[in-house]
Image (cartoon, rainbow, N blue to C red; front, side, top):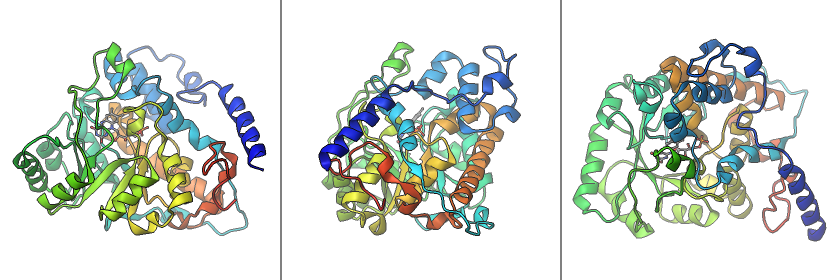
Length: 395
Ligand SMILES: Cc1cc2nc3c(=O)[nH]c(=O)nc-3n(C[C@H](O)[C@H](O)[C@H](O)COP(=O)(O)O)c2cc1C
């Protein structure tokens, strides 16, 4: 039985490998913009889906700036897998179900804060490479659209400048990198600064313990500015969590073991992530990690809030993660690319994704997005061999 599953998986792998990777699948944008010249920004109206913003940014930005955003680690296999993996699992649409109210069901809570949609802007450094107003566009767009923004520590604008651009009452979670070799006072000072700026939570990124091998970025001298080998540990987490009143979320969980340890260490929420495939090539995508947790420790999804990011480009991708129990889904590059159009561009990307989620949920017979479950997807269509080749999930 297992043998035949492996043969099927191998055949499926072969078929998949024969398919060329397309950074943006061909949906006709070039046909729609035949006169676009290199360096020109297309009209915002021409953007009909999130991949279009990648096309626009690549055409418009200086190569160095675009490369910083687009870059993945090594041969960028994880970068590609992050996107491709979603298309290995297909929906099991149900019909004859009243979904007429589905677009009213996108609202969610993230750590108790209410938002209009189950997705957020993941932390990404150097928004200034896309637009002079940098992160200010992102924080304003998130505020206007009522979604969560996680500003990066290494943003172009300061923590305080971004905080000053928030709308009244807007919730942001501040991403931080912590230096495990630094004196406690330095860490405490960073926490105090984050609290003083009004952040509602800290997002501690733990998937970058060493520098990433970034070949594309190295060609254009836009790799990471520092080289480090961190001494992170659960004891370190237990220590730093007592240095601030803010909840400290962990970003960059990539295995069921670490998800379970996060529960043990009373981490309030985790973000499944491989850093957009930018840190270690070959790391599994957050969908694969979510499947691993679903198969081996599904209780984790009930014990703490689980978020995920990486490769999300469509409403359908969001739904597949939510189906496994993920509470909210993050996007990095799509919003950085949309930022070349300024706040308006970021808002348009948010609106497009909201609409896609509602349409897709409706078309698969999910009347309430917040209640989607694993039965919405045929998890056996993937060839990943979770659990040693045994098909996982309810079908
Ligand atoms: C240009 C860029 C800069 C990033 N900078 C950070 C960062 O400073 N801190 C962090 O935790 N993650 C960072 N990330 C990772 C994102 O938070 C997120 O995990 C990733 O972009 C998700 O994949 P996606 O771009 O395919 O949506 C960055 C990603 C990109 C694309």
